[in-house]
Image: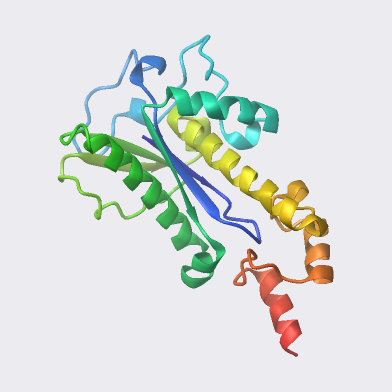
Length: 232
């Protein structure tokens, strides 16, 4: 299972995580390394795992390296091809309450949990290897699994190195971008379709001119400063 998130840096909107299980028969797992000792995962489960050549998903990589058109093309194929997938969103109010790091961990935890739930409904004894982009692993002890059913590790730049993480990266990015387009239609003066909530000059100018939206993250510095100025 590959896991990734998008939306840590923007000033507004949800942070979004996705978890994806791709079928092994489309991955280049022909020469796995020696079995692990149970404390670390086999390298083939974390490093340089790609889609087999000539597959519709063979272009998968970190979503930030793909054009919007390519992401939009790949997303439905990922949904159709994946064994299981889930997307989780944490809203700005929760981000402000628990901070963006904890909100990101919560989003990943929820996406993983939903994927696990859907699998064990039909395969109660299923085993999971969870590969997470970045350098942190969320708390997975709350999942209804035995001690031997789940192994997890974080992989720095995993969205460029493991196809399942790349797939999760694309689903999370496309989902959040669609949410941003919906907000852009609701608040046209903010031009959210252009900056997707990130703190660009245009976004900061709109924030100063038109004010803070309900979807803005009030704990983030530019919004926090504006709130402080309004109180003076």
